[in-house]
Image (tube, rainbow, N blue to C red; front, side, top):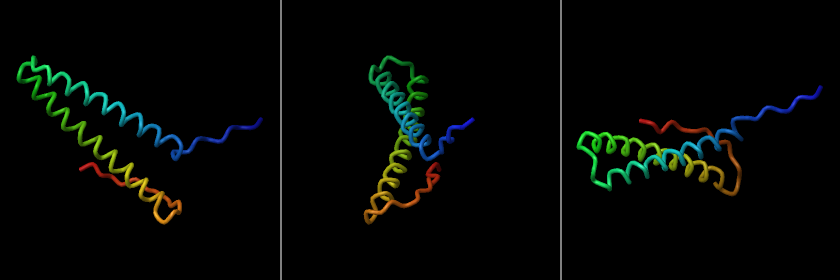
Length: 89
């Protein structure tokens, strides 16, 4: 019986990254909307602000990684191997 080839992380990882980015961005938009209403107690506003900062940093890190991938893939018109850098700090 023939078996299907396994999916590699090269094909599944970018999709997961995109989904994670989109989920983080959606959550950030919700946090901003709650804060813009201005009807939260101070403690909730502070929690939302902290979460917003975390989400902003996550999204920026993911965008930086995506930019690095694009730069590597388009460098001199050649495809090159990409290894993700850990920008979390």
